[in-house]
Length: 144
Image (cartoon, rainbow, N blue to C red; front, side, top):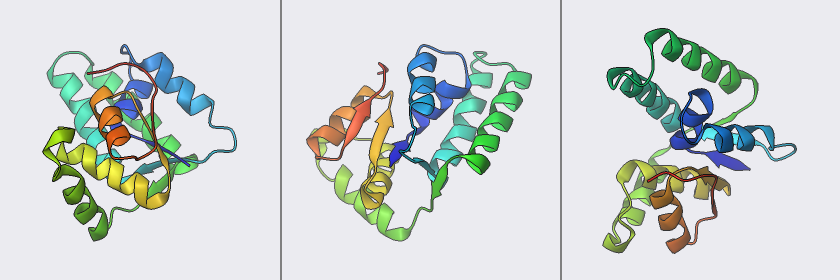
């Protein structure tokens, strides 16, 4: 199973540097199920709104991206429910100050690890932290 983090999802549904590799991950899935979590849904809504506030995305484009995302959520993605144990596992992951892992990214890693999924991301920091923590991850493109 491929767990797609928010950096990859937002890039796949908007036009930015990571769009091509993000869309490639979506197309290349074949028999490997694509998973997101309820947390990805929340962060995607926030990420699209942030792009509007920063004037990197128009209101209509935001609405179109959100609609397209929700269509694929309903038709394609396995949506993993976030449970209390995921939060506790994320707390353990961020307890190591050497990882420089952000709490939201730790939650993604904890959810994916609990599901036995490989994380697909455009976030170099998350990918490096996953490697350090021995959580399978693939850096689909570059983003700091």
